[in-house]
Length: 260
Image 1 (cartoon, rainbow, N blue to C red):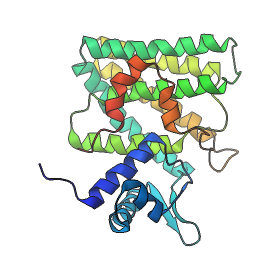
Image 2 (image 1 turned 90 degrees about the vertical axis):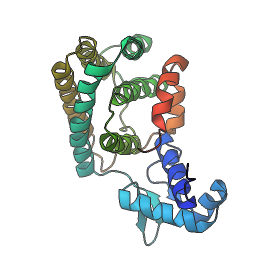
Image 3 (image 1 turned 90 degrees about the horizontal axis):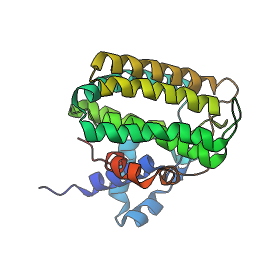
Image 4 (image 1 turned 60 degrees about the vertical axis):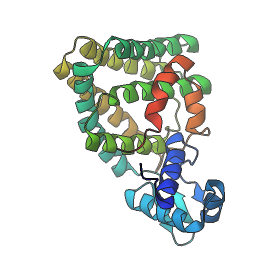
């Protein structure tokens, strides 16, 4: 097996930091600092940064230097359109290929949603406390990542890997999710799970499309009063710490899976 070049190694390590949320949207990147933390010279780091700028994860400005790029409203809309295509395909693939163990894991993830709602103890449009909101985001993302694992096409898997990172860079809107949002997501996930459990690709695909279209409308509404939703005040590493260990153990290999 050929060892990756230093530039490739730098690229993968920085990309992994983006995936974990260690480098949040708007964060300024120091080329010398990254080189020190990665234990290599600035040249491969510079090449990795150039590649990540080209791919849209970072941006360079004359006065601020290199920043982790937040997404604007149009980019979020485009990203949801991509999600609809790729995750619809993944849902159909999951319905065809998922076995009993994987479906059991998915069922465990879905069961967390009503538990979060009950833990909040209030109904309607009351925002969730921050700890429960963090768990809600983690469980929701875990559900989608579990379904994406059914994709075997390497090109599609690479696209999915990219938008997983971009969605995590998008972070969370300023307004915390409400119990009503949790209930809606739970209903969408149950419909998806039903299609997968019955091994009905068409039903699973349609359920995923409906779910993502609803999420797109909610995400874009966050831009009506704010130019850019604020990044979470906790990194995604904290987000994943909100998951129960048995669920995280199933999802963790997907988070930083090498690019096909």
